[in-house]
Amino acid sequence: MSKVSISVANSIDSLEAAKFLYKLLGMSLSTVKASLNNGNNGAFFSGELFLNDHNEIADKIRKIISFFEKLNMNSSLLKLTAM
Image (cartoon, rainbow, N blue to C red; front, side):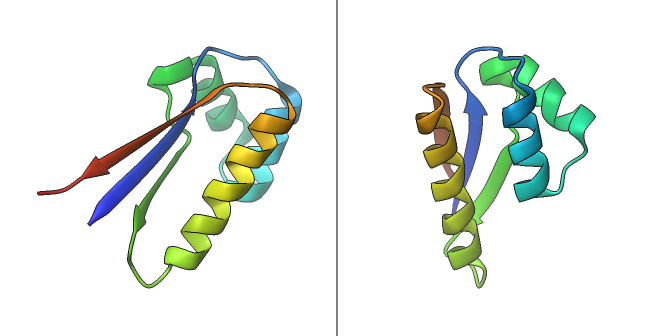
């Protein structure tokens, strides 16, 4: 089973990004803003792949990456694999 986590590469203060993640992930604005301000140490998304909800998780990952690419913001994608 693999787990994917996403954070921004560097600390950012973007209301647009915070609103996007708030709507997509259902997190509070304060939690999202704190994650974005923590940069690479503040993962705002984590999801396990290859479970029953893998289509939903993959869709969220695509939307997040696409959003940050459109704004020219760097994001970090980390894949953790359980052994």
